[in-house]
Image 1 (cartoon, one colour):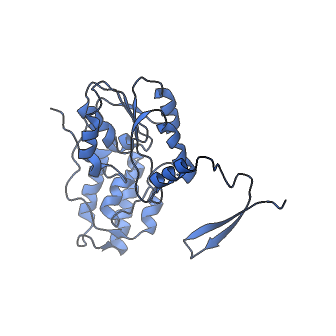
Image 2 (cartoon, helix red, strand yellow):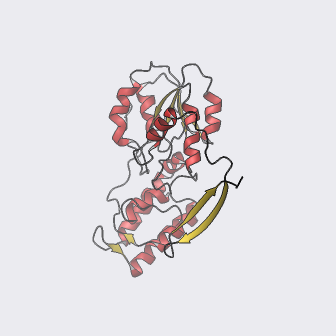
Image 3 (cartoon, one colour):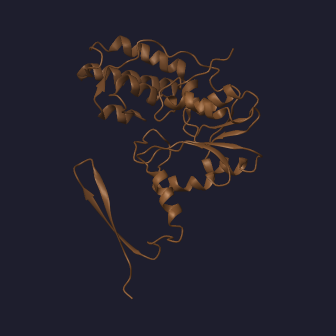
Length: 276
């Protein structure tokens, strides 16, 4: 009997483990044999559950963020964490400082040199403060490290992505390929607005987020968002004012870069109409 995961087997920012049981209930309305296309595959959890619940369905997993590569690297990740357990001698959840930090960094550098790849996101959950992530060695160097090292190996999960059709490309290309498949259902879980998206490969702007809405029109879908994005309220407002269009369409634009401190800045924008 195949194991069904209700959370991703490796750390992933934004995975839908809290939605898993409700998501399973929603899937029941679709017959087995339906084609499901996971446009923003992320950790693969939505695709994995869909395939477990609908074993005769084609489930397309767009692994744009390289989660499958992280799974392949799991033996190296476990070996690295085992070595770090031997190095770190500070109490759990306390900072790793001085010579011990240098030994940790040296160990990570050695593994990256020997194996050519480090799963920095999984590593981050063991040596960085909660909800902080490194994506490269330079991130580890500049951050304070903490002893949150996992005490046991991550379990092997070779069957997690079994049966999925795996691709890795822009979601628009995946949509174009499957948009005309009869009765297709799109799983749509884009990066949330107003949240930290550092671990995603794409740079996500408001216009990108709104572009996703064009995918929804005329298709069946399961869509995820949050109250921070206010996207539902925005769409509701747009529906009430269809005649408005873009009020800034013919405006001129000026920008000013402002700095709050050495590491934080923002851009002020002025939009204005030309004099008649």
